[in-house]
Length: 104
Image 1 (cartoon, rainbow, N blue to C red):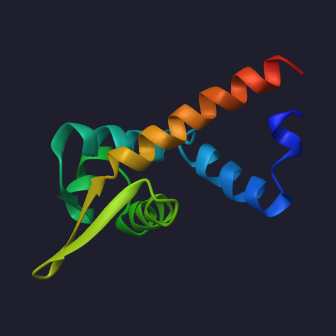
Image 2 (cartoon, rainbow, N blue to C red; image 1 turned 120 degrees about the vertical axis):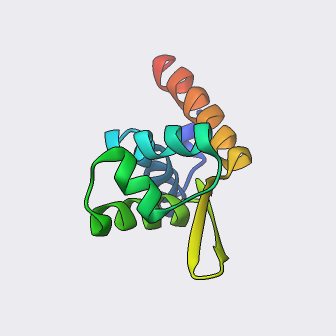
């Protein structure tokens, strides 16, 4: 049985959102920035990637909701970092799906 026939529509939607989030250029840039610098707050991030704060905050929220980023309050700041374990799982799953799609 093919992999895609085993995934129900809700699971597929969740999976798709997790995979698509890493394709967007600014979100990819945020992930790379955090991988290079470790923990950063929203101000540090938007100053580096030339976005307005509201837009940066939205990207951070989406990445956090998908499990790609960790978020920790430190005093008055919220610090973001990459959840490397989840990111690795998402990337591996993406590769498996690419292989499965090619074999169809």
